[in-house]
View 1 (cartoon, rainbow, N blue to C red):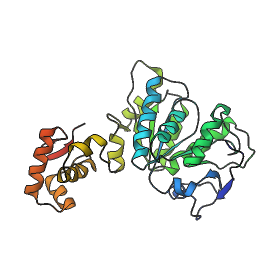
View 2: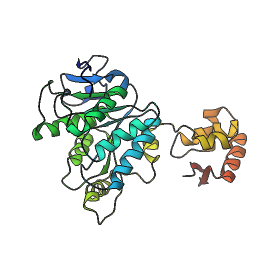
View 3: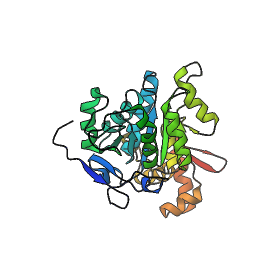
View 4: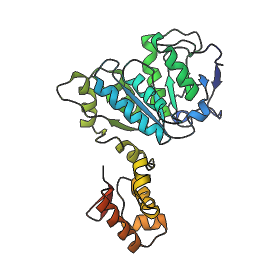
Length: 290
C-alpha cells in the first residue's frame, strides 16, 4: 500500500457512507477508509467470503464469480484474508472497471495480512479499504466477528464460496440472515471438510449457485451480452436475448412489453434464438441456454 493514501472518515448520513450499512442494527458510528468509498458503493454490492485454507476449487469459484459479477457492475466486498477472500478481490480486479471493497479487522493503515500489502493498494485504487477501528489499531481475533457484520451490511447478498463447519464465513452468513440479506452458497464435494459449511447453508435454505450467472439472476442484475453473442446475433435478436438474460425466466408477453415489439414478433425471434442455441423454452417460459 502506498504511504500517500489519505485516510478519510464517513458517518451515517454522509454521502460516502454505504446506504445499506446505515440501515442495519447498530451501524458503525464512524468508518475509516482509503480509496473512494462513495463510488465503490454507488451500485449493488455482493459479499464473497469463505475458507482461508481450503481448495483450489473454492478459490476458483470465488474468483470467477467475483470477476463475472464485477464485470456486470457489482462491487465485490470481502475481508482481504488468505484463500477465498483474496481470490474474490483478485477476481473483481480482473474485470474491466471492476470495483471491490475490503473490510478489515484492524486499522486501515495496517496491511493484514502483511503478504497482502500490494493487494491492499490495488483494492484502494479500484474501490476502498475500510474499518470501524481507528488507524493504528492492531488486528485481534475479537475484532473479526464485528467486522463481519459490516461485510454483510454493505451488501445485497452474501456468497459463501467454501467453508468448514466452524468457519467465520458462517458467522457472516448468520449476520446476513439477521440483516435480511440474500444468502448464496457454492455446492461442494460432500467428502471435503471445506465444503461442509456451504453445503449445510444450502440445506438450511441458502440459494445454491449451479451456474455462475445464477447469482446475477437472483440479485436482478442484467447480464450484458458477451462478445460471442454480440457477433452472432442480429439487432432484434440481441434485443430479445438481453430481455431474456435480464431475468431467470420470462414470458413472450413480458418481453413484448419490455421491448415494444408485438408478441408475434417476439415469438418468431425466440424461435430463431432457440434454433441457434441461445435460449430454451419450456412450459411457456423462456430461459437463457446455459
